[in-house]
Image (tube, rainbow, N blue to C red):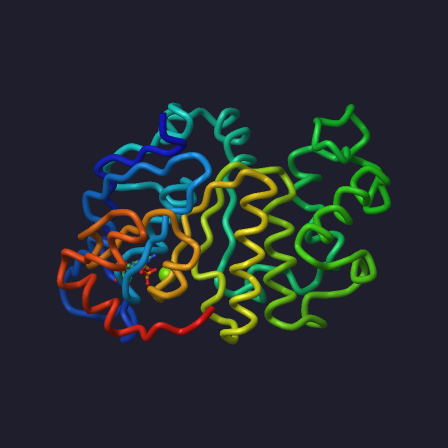
Length: 281
Ligand code: ADP
Ligand code: MG
């Protein structure tokens, strides 16, 4: 059984996002995701590649039910995500996390590193180093709660940082360090599945390469499954087991990384391969 089964997923926005603002004449329906079906298997990285505006982020968000589809179905470990009641959805949310492109926008600037990483633990009431549900009241211990602090330090070390930064704020860090903090936060609840939406697109190539290597290491250490989104074929190739190519809301080609890179069938896939020189990452 695949970890995730996506069937005929469609997301239609009644009015497309327009750079001209909201005064375009008539209705311009946008099929941001158009009848997409795919499986994601436990332990793999499915790379999702396509040009800007092709629907990658919309598909990533739909997969986690951060937005609701117009039609279609999503199963996570065989359970129908879209009909999951509140309580079950809350439990499922622990297993599914997202890493964003811009770690500065996704980290609250008013919070210290310790609070940022501990927040999911507090919300979900999981404060022990093992991630087991705590006894009632344990979560009220504030940021100095020893079990939670130990878990935050463990997470920092997992992403190549250490406890010396616990009391610092996001603006004090470089883009790469902020992305590491965002990753530590995403790992806090021991998720099974992570959507990484252009996690290195805002970073320098060398810093991006370090983050990609970190994601690969974390996958091995924690048995993670990724949906890895990027507009860059070389980045997707480096990390992915399989690659899905997205064009205008549809998956136009999907196959093993080798198959997509060496024997692309679709003209759009070929153009993506040609557009991106083989940079070493
Ligand atoms: P990508 O991540 O590949 O750049 P997106 O999923 O962000 O693509 O966008 C796909 C299409 O859907 C684009 O045409 C975009 O303008 C449109 N879109 C995305 N989000 C919204 C929204 N909230 N409202 C209206 N249109 C949207
Ligand atoms: Mg996007």
